[in-house]
Length: 296
Image 1: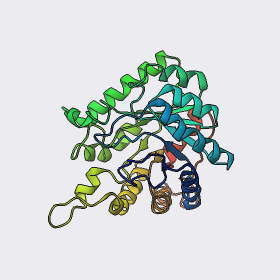
Image 2: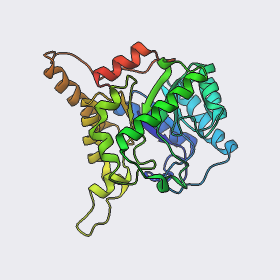
Image 3: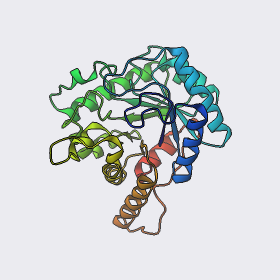
Image 4: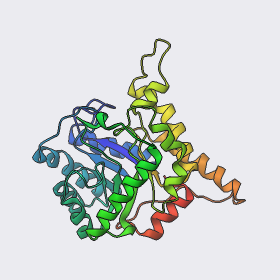
């Protein structure tokens, strides 16, 4: 999943793709690098970010979604707002990537149920301006799994089918540093819960701290891509369905390596596991198969 930020204040690219034409060309470049899916977002979720008026988010996102779909791209919309999700799906998006897991907008679940779009429910404890204060866990792996299960129960109650759901442990969201690592180390446990799993580690703070210089200064976002690709390889080997990344080429290579590694472990080294494209109205068969094969 390649990231297309249509924002002026993203932590990772600082507004390089804020213009619609630039965002569309960026998406096309990510497809050329091997992205299977493009995630278009119009509101930054970096720590401390303020919310964007809904009219502005719509103006940023919809033209990019429409133009990328017209080019044949498989597109997801990164939003916590039901109205943005509904209009993006109407323009061809096939997946709603909601970092709040439906908690930010009570209408989101009904929109997802009504459209039949695939839906990423991420672990979330609050908007960007307050999330760091919620980095308190008894056992981060158990707590995240339990809270995601609660989100799934709420989605089911609203009519969302299991076949639509993808889970995301929410790396960096209410997880400022060390609490991210146990989630990655125990990723197979989350995969074992039966839903496809999306991993979004790309360029995040905990990788910046890991790659800090001799004086302790965290590596800047663009210097975290090698570490991101390493996480991609490990996540794919652990059975993740997708990784959400800012730079695609290295992670696409990492997925191929992990897929061949897994093939060799089960004696099918000639297989091509790991390359599964998202289809409209994702089905349990397709998404679970992708998760089992370690697809991106």
